[in-house]
Length: 187
Image 1 (spheres, rainbow, N blue to C red):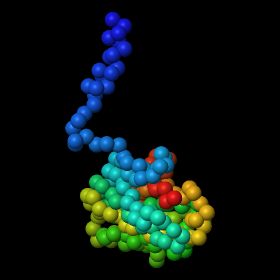
Image 2 (image 1 turned 30 degrees about the horizontal axis):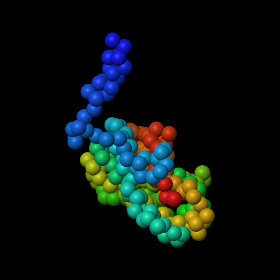
Image 3 (image 1 turned 135 degrees about the horizontal axis):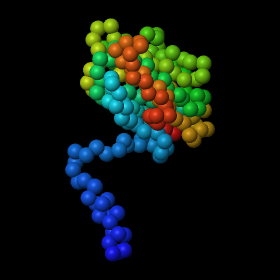
Image 4 (image 1 turned 60 degrees about the horizontal axis):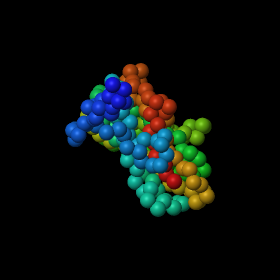
């Protein structure tokens, strides 16, 4: 009898597994950093999930650009969005050369597409005066330029600390960094 009780957890585990290709796998990790994910399920009223897609990370050297595209799925009635990004360490990037370009139907309220905060974070945003963002679409692309400090650093990350979006300024979904762990390891 005792022998069957030992086998019970194994049988239950096998019964709960699935070979169904439609079963969603957990979010993938974009780096060796176990804390940062390149995709998170948000399950909000106005967004289902967010994916960040970096380009230019391979053999990155000082003075080169990294682009990060913010892809949203399941948008509903989104007319405004705000994304706050933390660069760590800040000295690895030429922040004054950073640019954010929102995708249509969104436009940016800032000249460079970025508001530089006193705490070293970058505030990205967009608003639509015409139509609302619906379905799956890109919110925009952030372009960062690395500095000469990059060569001396080993742990360089870009982390999203806030996503806030919705149909109006006062009616929004709000997701904070500790809930998401959304980001990339640059080096």
